[in-house]
Amino acid sequence: METISTGLPDFVLREARAEDCGLILALIRELAEYEKLSHEVVATEEVLRETLFGEQPRGEAVIGEYQGAAVGYALFFYNFSTFTGRPGIYLEDIYVKPELRGRGYGKCLLTYVAGLAVERNCSRMEWSVLDWNEPSIQFYRSLGAAPMNGWTVQRLDGSALDEVAAMFKNEAGEST
Image 1 (cartoon, one colour):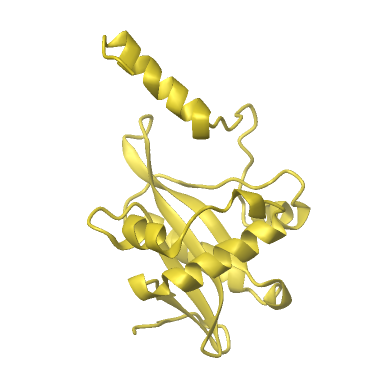
Image 2 (tube, one colour; image 1 turned 180 degrees about the vertical axis):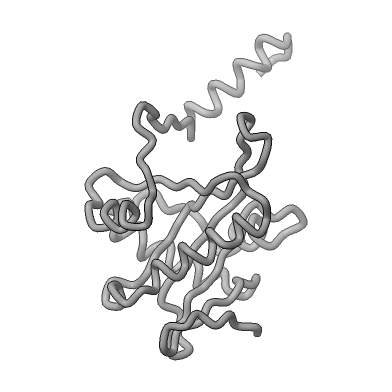
């Protein structure tokens, strides 16, 4: 297992592997608990294995380890900017266990992903933050991140997604 030196004492990064799906899921659940969104986690190890490491991976993850134990992760994927004509990286999750925050591990994970964005010729890196998460907002501001004022995230999921998808079938003359 190849590790990436970080310059922080006893802290390394490594690219996630398929055998990390249980670990990734456990960290996702910790993040969801912190964000008061545990009820929304429906991911399973099998789903993560297929979507992150299957024939068509849809995302990537990097694990942060302190003294050989996983203490955080970043999970990201490509998006695309029609205005720049280039891909970007969307940082879906960045998480460090609460008892180990303030040591630079989160910054290390974020700057590593930013480095990948530059290396991969991406035009930007984006992510969302809950509006009540003031510590994270201040952290992101300290790095130079700017809020996207005037933009509101929209989402279709569950039955609403199914219903909108069915509209195409109806308009295309297919039965639902």
